[in-house]
Length: 250
Image 1 (cartoon, rainbow, N blue to C red):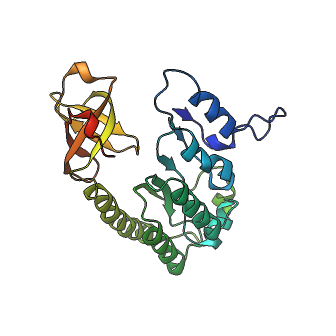
Image 2: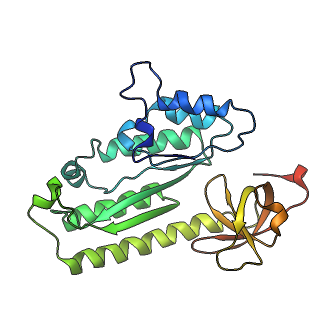
């Protein structure tokens, strides 16, 4: 995994022309690497070349974490995000045109100074349109030394918490919708270790970064195995090892 606050901004200040898509291609060419992941991506630096990597690099997993933060342009401007919602939606469309099976997750902050009810509704509208696989959601809080700390029109705590609760209920519906669509399908997981909730189980991740718990011993840890999804939950899936590898369908 490649990690960075804005990992896809890598190379922007390098004189030799080495950018992030070039780095991904070089890693994909290394023998023995079966999966590549990266996080977190900043929407303003998500180039068409990087998006095309999801089609051209077999080892690159079909998942991107693309924090939008808000669905309202005035809020994004106040956050100094450097893109508009129209920009963001065009990039989501390009991602899904290039890689239809891609999983998209995001970060959203509610209650940023000056966020009106109409601004919050635009965030909900964006969620309904994009239908993220999952999100990390937070209420805004002042951070010492930031420009936003000095903004007026701070949002009351009760309003922020009410907005957060509603937003999370919308996302729960979308996450369950995505999970239930996988029921009965067969997919590959990279088995990472024992399950946190049951040491008799092991857990792994699909290429789309969904957690799957299976009944399997230590001998499967570190391996890529096909599993059939048998149960779906809010934050994880349940599966069983699928021995007929030649029948893998997704």
